[in-house]
Image 1 (cartoon, rainbow, N blue to C red):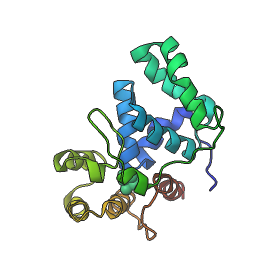
Image 2: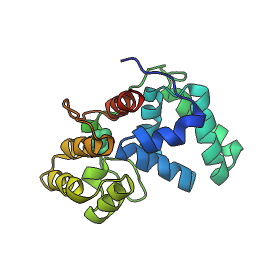
Image 3: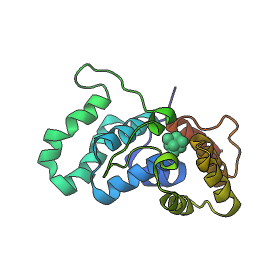
Image 4: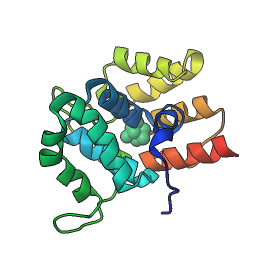
Length: 189
Ligand code: SF4
């Protein structure tokens, strides 16, 4: 799959316009807490790589946030390696690929973790609040919650996509990076 490059200066706007809820949540927590646990760093980090954030920009982003909490020295020592590793620049030099919805939905986030799929892992109350912030309300929100109750998480995400973009998504959502690229296609057309 080919993805365009994205710039660090655009990332907050892209997050609010085109990130699926799972990644909006992680990105928001990274900005808010200046930290994410391992599962969140992997899920968000590989997604950002997939949407076209270059390694240098990724390092700058994580460093900007983490250093506010733990200082630049600890960041360089303990976290920079893993980011380069995700980009295939360390260790076995594997080019790791972003997680699919299926993988994210079947993950098991623990206390203090922010990874996972909000449709699957949020309480109903938190999910309603998060969807409200994305601008999903009324019948659209009821339809999304209906899918969630029936454990059709990807369909819930697809309905969210359709409500936000006022456009249909016939293929359905099966990958966070697909959500992003379809959103960008609509917003740029
Ligand atoms: Fe993310 Fe997929 Fe869940 Fe949507 S269905 S929030 S893209 S994991």
